[in-house]
Image (cartoon, rainbow, N blue to C red; front, side):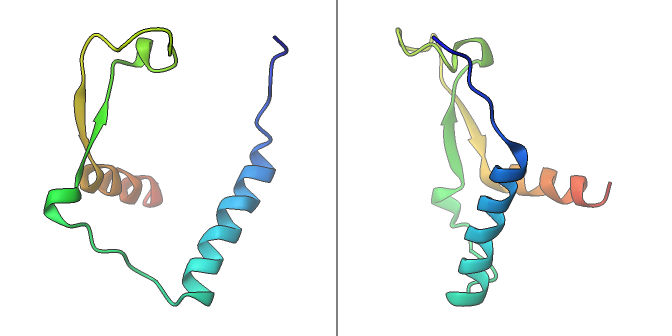
Length: 76
């Protein structure tokens, strides 16, 4: 199978276009994270791309923790 590449400039432009649409056209600047919808499933990093078998375990992530991390990145 041929290797594939992700063009980060194309990805950045696409993400910006989607966010511009949501903010400017739809008028949505903030999204509330409901407590019952704050968690998501994750699995061990070494198993995340192996779709030939079920992951050995499932973990939970928390969207609000991810947002806190993004805020730290924004601050440098």
